[in-house]
Length: 430
Ligand SMILES: [Zn+2]
Image (cartoon, helix red, strand yellow):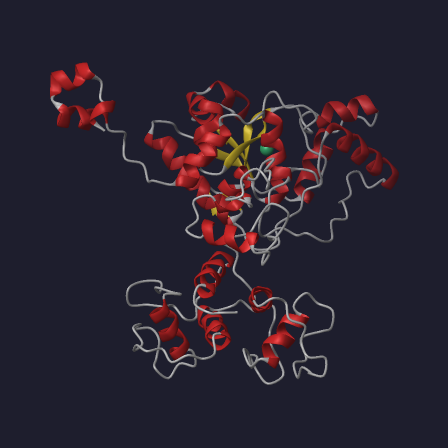
């Protein structure tokens, strides 16, 4: 450290004081934020736009995307949509669940939380930013559209589309888009404010740090409306790191969404062994809660994808033939690794609890004696998983969620499963 302090300053102040003067303001160490800022420095406007189109975002309706009426004239509406799509407008889904109020506007819960952080960071550096528009339904977009539509010629429609999204095609429908202003300035003047300068410096590093991107950045073409410097969209840090991700570029990072994760090495191992191919082509979905079906499938693959005995009949009525988890569940039952949630159900789509997964592992290991007493205060000795949990602690598969707690009923994330399995293979000969 001392070598990095300029000599003059060191001479003037002495090494300790010079180090204190030069120390950066203490920011929360977050390797994922650092990675986003570094990666984001080279992002082109088109990549920022694509980040939202390709983001994996929760709480959106993925089916029933029949576009809403615009004028009510079916033929004209179809023509309007065609013109809009030719300009780069993309059909946007509406939320599938509850929204949260932030700054008096409705937003997706994750976006609302990230907005509060971004707004606070701006305030801490002396900049005031407010939301002037958040979630907007396709119905209210239709009202805006009809208010401003002054003609139905292609020229008139295209002129309107420079400023107003086709109903059903606004990013505001998703609850992940916000329009901003600073102080008394209107949103059209936002680009000229000090707040915008702060937000956009170093290729939008301050916005990116909190998972926000410019929605229609200056310089991007064929994006729907003309550039709108006041609109930002929330995608979160992982989706930013997934832009144009090449899973083959780094064998230690086969998925884009593991940066900064405690489980990054475990997940890379899981991919190398062929136990996972991810939740899509580039993501592992590290923080998603796992289902019981996924747990059975991971374990079955770890044990070499053994074909279950064809004579063996499942008594569960919720495991249909031909699902990805049908053979894994049959194999688990046949080997005594699960008895289901009831005699007739496995509950494949239920969230997997930590106690359930450790029990699967313990049974798969041959139900060994723990050799040490239960060390967690939140696990009753009478709990069905108490022996399995004591064993898992003793052999080092888990350290618990704190020194005295295991959190047996907490859900298990896909990242945690990767870690449990990675530690498990070191113990059990297969
Ligand atoms: Zn907007």
